[in-house]
Length: 157
Image 1 (cartoon, rainbow, N blue to C red):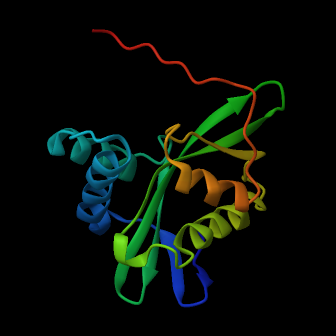
Image 2: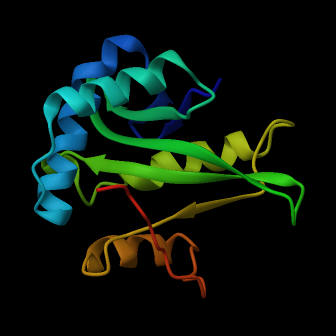
Image 3: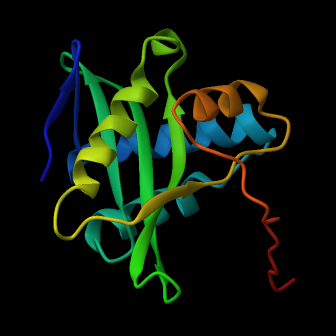
């Protein structure tokens, strides 16, 4: 796997011992970005599922010394049109004290390195809340472009 270093940040795959940080990051992300309070038990089980089964996805963590300061999760989408996998970037969270210090840039840089491997991805996709202007500026600065697609979902009641 990857162990990328950007300035003093180190990015590496999450392990089961990172479970609590990932859960708290996801809970904080939902509160901050969408004003949602999620069930901690549900999030805990969801994080554990990814840590237990890499076919569901994986987490990367950015570390400042011994302290985790950011996270992201990727999941996969097969494209028959392109005969390859997209990596969907999700659950991006940077602790408030580490913001504007290149944490997401370091995480994304590690993903781009991983894409260069034979089992890599053909591209990255993500979605962002339509009111999250700060995140959109960051993504645009890193070369992401807005697509012509709209995101829809259906969930049973």
